Structures are given as C-alpha cells and as structure tokens.
Image (cartoon, rainbow, N blue to C red; front, side):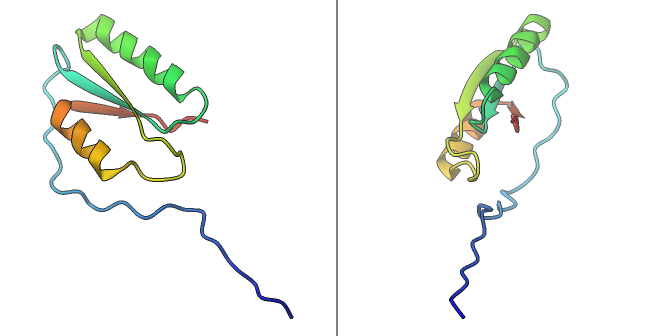
Length: 94
C-alpha cells in the first residue's frame, strides 16, 4: 500500500488579539477601514459600502487587501489598520 498524505487547506487559527474595543457612538467623521479578502468582487462590494457610508456619515475610507484569500491577514497589516481606523468592515465575498 502507498503512502497517504493528508493536507489541511485551512490557514492558522487567529489569536485572540487583545482586548475588544468599545463600540462607537456614531460613524460621522470616523476613519473606517475596508479589508478585502481578495476574492472576486470583494473590492467592488467594499467600494460600494464605503461610498454609501461616506454619503450618509461623511466617513474617511481606507482600503486594505490581505492578499491570499485562504490565509489570515498579516499581523503587520492588522496593526496598520488598528492604528489608522476607528472601525473596520471585512469582506468575505465569493
């Protein structure tokens, strides 16, 4: 009988990442990050959501892309988002 190799296609489990932030009292004037998982149309969906939130609340949008859809976002990217944004919208779009 031959050798059987089993592969796990799932990326590493994310850590807890520290304390949970407080909820915002509103979005007006806030900087909101939009993190794409890099799947087809994720950027389109996030762009439309950002435009609507800007129209309604006057947000400042910052767009990010985590690169490879099946992997967790790099720790450096997460830290950049945390430093620069008060809220984040994630896309898990196919």
